[in-house]
Amino acid sequence: MKHVLESVESQFEMFQILNEDGEIVNKDDMPDLSDEELKELMRRMVYTRILDQRSIALNRQGRLGFYAPTAGQEASQLGSQFALDQDDFLLPGYRDVPQLIWQGLPLYQAFLFSKGHFHGNQMPEDVHALSPQIIIGAQYVQTAGVALGMKLRDKKNVAVTYTGDGGTSQGDFYEGINVAGAYGAPAIFFIQNNYFAISVPVEKQSAVKTLAQKSVAAGIEGIQVDGMDVLAVYAVTKHARERAINGEGPMLIETLTYRYGPHTMSGDDPTRYRTDELNDEWEKRDPIVRFRKFLEDKGIWSEEEENKVVEDAKDDIKKAIKEADNYPKQKVTDLIGNMYEELPVNLQEQMEEYKEKESK
Image 1: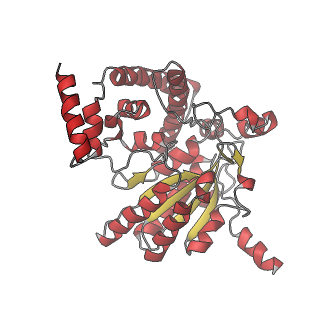
Image 2: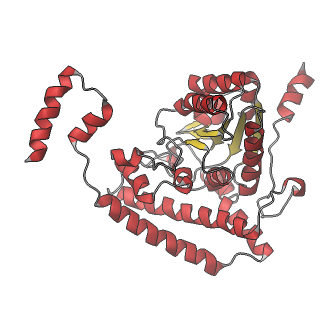
């Protein structure tokens, strides 16, 4: 029996293209990206790191509300989004705002989402996505439904979702991958394994050696990938998308990654459950540093180019937060009206009362 278990686990050995030094260790699976596309990937990663730093500062100033830091997960988030089509459907978790932005959500709306304003949840017509899901794992069930709808309409697109390692402990996780597998729905399910579901280490959440092998129970393909390697994430996502639109069913992708900041800015203190030694180990795997080494060795990236991206990001963020700050305030009647298509009797009177107050 032992050799059978070992053979299952060996199927999910980590997929990688660039090592920590930015060197290609897997030439056969190197994605076919032009120099301009490689630079665009780097630009997005640097921009998103600056966005994270500024968002943390804005949160501390009281100008943003809920915020989940993203530094460290750029390769996992942006490498996957870069492989998508504009008409693919995105169902993000609360840490996945960067994918929404690069899929087309205006930055000021992302800030409004953080502020709790309803307009932050209103996707532009050409952005095929739901607003970030706060309920852990719920987006997995929704993704199965969206993907099944695509299949029934014979659309050559995929539904893509993300959760963390803790999300795989939820019933919705299993229900989502099981339904998608049973119906061969064109879905891509990401597990961004950053090793801590808030403060609970992954080894205390599940006895499996890899979270990717949970795909076996649903009868779907699964793979574990180096989530700090943007090229590996891109290549695996592209492969999963091609499989899905060709009718070969869904795929579960576990990206091994790390969040450098707290779980959220709502009082979490990562020093209580993560050691300095662990942080230092993951700092050496920084996805931006790794990709920068690769691009510099190719002679297509420079400090001047990166500095320009940093300044452009700061300028964009300054304009976007000003627009969000000046956006019309949310009213009580907006809240009530957006919650119900037909108001229940007990709210009809309150709606009229608040309309009168707001008109004064």
